[in-house]
Length: 114
Length: 110
Image 1 (tube, each protein chain N blue to C red):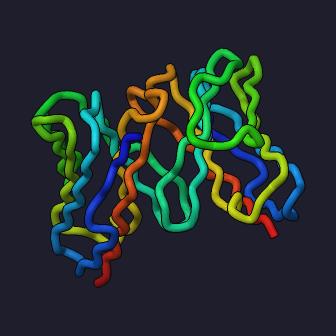
Image 2 (image 1 turned 90 degrees about the vertical axis):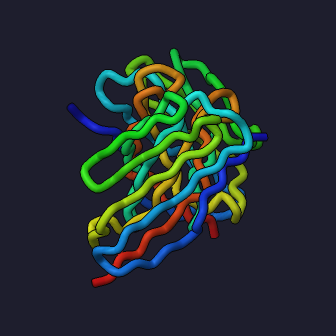
């Protein structure tokens, strides 16, 4: 059973640029949720994807967008990067949208915006 | 919106001492989950509690869900250095998706 894999592991971008982060869900999981974790804080919910459509969104602006593919993998896109977007971006997969039974998290992508 | 607070923010104990973190939600929760995040790591699912007053144990860890389903606790007996990390509680929040608490960072020294 493969876990959740994220790429890249680290990334440095300049303010105003765009970035795409990738996530492969755990085998058998059909739902992907994305979280932003700033240093010293708890993960903040960005959005969730189920059946290739957005299924719930947290308090993040439209420049945060995503995709889910037929194989359940997912992408997180952030446009017009701001310094405050610097954080650890976590992808979590689950079987079903209500997370009963818990989320499996990937190791995350550490994004630094300079 | 829903808020999930944890206390304390940080606790430093000597190995062998006990540790407890408390989680309080501003709203009633259908279930509560606990995660552990090691330094430099990612959250790892520990357990889920669903019933009012439920108590579950995992070796030295004891988890409780309050009667009103608005609070929870995690107690570690006789801490070890391997217990170091940040412990998060999480419950259904915005759009019924998991909302994480503020976390309690545990440091254990010999």
